[in-house]
Structures are given as C-alpha cells and as structure tokens.
Length: 230
Ligand code: 5GP
Image (tube, rainbow, N blue to C red; front, side):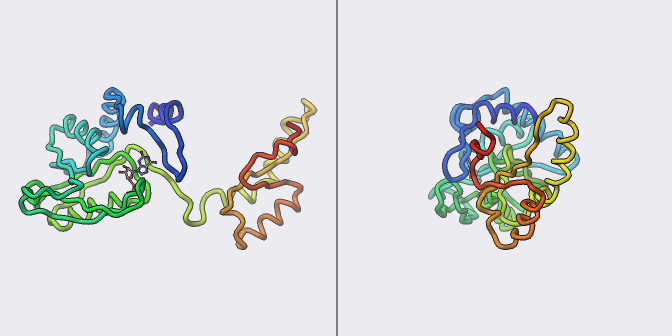
C-alpha cells in the first residue's frame, strides 16, 4: 500500500534492535484517516473468506482491528495481557514480546471465542510471528477456525539465504550494461556491493572471489566514500 509506505518513510523512525517507531500515526498518536484506508485494504483482501469475528492482542492491535470490524460490521475481541480475575472460561497462552524481549501471558474469554467462530486476526506488526502464534494457540484452544491474519507492517529478517544471494552473481553483467549506457557521457562505472556481516559467512567465499575476479568490489556495513572519491 503506497500511502502507508510513504508515511513510514516520512514519519517512521528506526531504533536500535530492529524496532520501527511509528508512534506519530499508529502506536501512540493515531491517524484515523490512514487507519481507515488500511482497514479498507484488509476488507478488500479478505473479502472472499468466511469471517464472523475480528481478533487482536491489546494494545496496539485494537485500533486497526476495530476499524476493520466497523467496516465489516463484525464484533472485535482482543486478548488481554493480564487475565482479569473476573474473566470467565479464560483461555490463556504465553507470548514472547519482540519489543520487550520477555514472555507475557495473554488471555481471552471462552465466552467471546468459541468453536462457532471464523476469525480474522489483525495486528500492527508482524516481526517474528510470536503474537500471531499466540493468537493461533487461543483460536485452537477455543476450537475456532482461523480464516486469515492481517498485519499493517511486516518486518522481514534474513534468517536464511535470500534474494540478495542471486544479485551477488550479476555484478559483471550489470557493470557491462551501465558502462555501455554511460559511455557517451564519458562516465566511468564501478560496481560496488555494500554488504552486512551476514555475508562474511564461509559459504559466500566463492561468490566474493567471483566479484573480485570481475573487478567489482564489496564493502561491509558502510558506503566506501573514499573509494568513490567523495
Ligand atoms: P512478533 O510477535 O511478530 O515477533 O512481534 C509483533 C509484535 O511486537 C507487535 O504486536 C508489535 O506490537 C511489536 N513489534 C514488533 N516489532 C515492532 C516494531 O518494529 N515497532 C513497534 N512499534 N512494535 C513492534
């Protein structure tokens, strides 16, 4: 969703530990107009599945969930972070918090989640998927059906080989094409990769050797300004 991507670029702040702060429009101050557009997108994407209830985990999932529930005209239920003493037929699970790096229990009443339910889960972030797994556990305990899950922002991490791997083998061709394109302007082309520590693993030795053999370069973690004469 272009509008959301633009807003993240404009107002999002990246903090240590892979945390994206979106406090000015999602997690603290909220932008209901943007939230509505996001909810409309969810409604569109889940229009062909059977849903009778929206589910989330407090607190930051509540705003998008309620907007989706409002548009779909469906009830919204949220798992509570502390089991209130008054909760009847409580179903409980444990979730690992990405931002606080600790476990916490979440509970939902069996009165509001049961075997007749077809659930759409909505939350603000999908990071490692622990909150999602917690919601799925509660749904299973209730004997309910999971119809779908929607997240405003998905964060991608590289825990395994990824699409960059293929790009490491294309420096030779790219350098040739750019050299051809820029030749009329008399601009010299160098092809340089800026890699993170992930690529220091032994399994990348051959491809790094290939890059060097093709007179291309790679650096780790920073743009080589001196190399670029900047
Ligand atoms: P997960 O359970 O998928 O690992 O993490 C998702 C939960 O952690 C979300 O409900 C969200 O509240 C929180 N979270 C994860 N990553 C971020 C982040 O980068 N920024 C913020 N604000 N919350 C995050």
